[in-house]
Image (cartoon, rainbow, N blue to C red; front, side, top):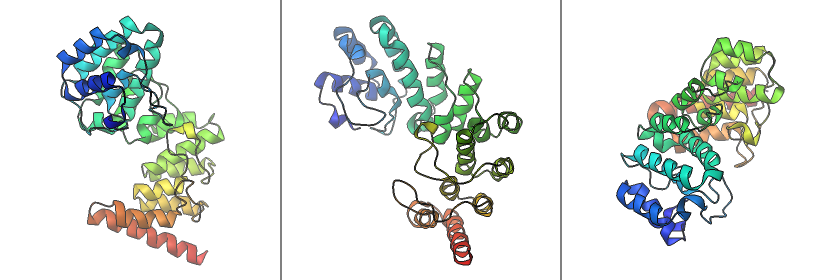
Length: 290
């Protein structure tokens, strides 16, 4: 979502005050127009940011301006207080959802305010959740913090955080879908030790995690291992029977196609390019000899 898509002039002005860190103007607008913290923006586009509340904009997730003002935590605190006073019925929902946006967002992490904002939101009553979404977006520190603050530790999260003792404890009662998500997490982060353990526990390397897993549901664990750039992770899955010809459900890309794309389109340096080239060569060789 871009600011240009906000058709409500008053709402747009308020969002721009958040983006610029103009606390004085923001406070004036919210005080004069209480609807700003009560009503949701009319933005019926499908997705996780459909019809957002004003508070949700503090996370810049989805990315609109690629940055946050230095006083974003102060701004968030003001908005939380305003919501608590003027929109009590939606307070918990607004808070919990904002925490999710901050924990999974790239911009709060890059701006160095992710944990600080999460701390504020949790202190004000947001429920920590389990951290899987944060892990699926590469925010390991955020996931760790959610667990520290009372979030539920699940098998996939324990895998992503490399908590082997917890993995061994949780794998015993995990259902097949949770096992697949755990293997997906291990593959996403290119963790050969976790992949080896989960495979030895009988986890099927083929399948697609559900939409609510936190990880993209269109890709198999082998796709995710390719994405991680870990040849060792890729080899472990292939040798365990992962389907090299499996296609992702969005772009129709095979695992070989992913490796070739990462090599030519996504790699930022020669070391990365070499890693993806080795993966592509290995997968092609295995396909030809199978």
